[in-house]
Image 1: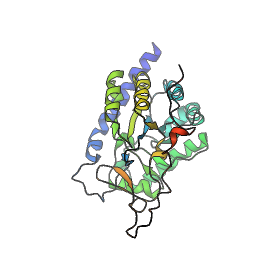
Image 2: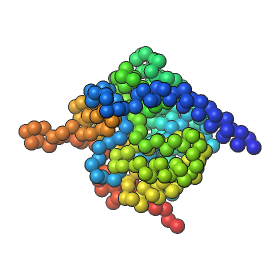
Image 3: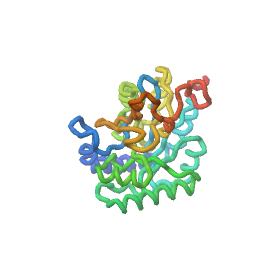
Length: 286
């Protein structure tokens, strides 16, 4: 009964928080009307026809399913990215360490899940430092990626994040697991929307995500997808110099120079032959 009560309480808190952030999210989602020079986070990556994508989890409330998710991902040999709030790290350091030890990326989801749009550049920088300090103290690895709370951002937020040396990450496939959709509904949403270079959004404490995850992984792997942590999906370097982000939030490597020389895409992880490496995804043994 205690677990059921906590799940309901967590679901109510999560729904309320997301409802508050809906207006900010809607206002910040890329649309064709925006100029391409507007600073945007990365929603997905141009990978051509290469079947590679990333799965991510936001961790802000609750912890009852974290180990279950780790176990499921291990069965399918999949590594993912968890965006964790600093307060969650402080409350559940053993889970943060378990995620790191299992080979998953542990990145920032802010220190306190505040609305970044209402913070100054200095406050954002301080918040990022606090969240990264907490994670690094547990994992020994400093986060380089940030998912803004509520998926909310404006131009000053993106500039402040990049000025702090971090890359802001959104998503182009939303599982909507926080709405307590059934496992089959979550599975249909995700598998019908994933494309090469997609970033999928889940939450670590959503009610039906552990039930849906195996079927989603089996479907993606069956379609030939390799699932990698986000840092292996994105193109590293300087925005505008090494990569561009278009009005939809799609990141792409800068084109080859006009003189015919090869563009320097050394920051982009080479996972083209991942199927033949130790990081490949495969169906679990029966």
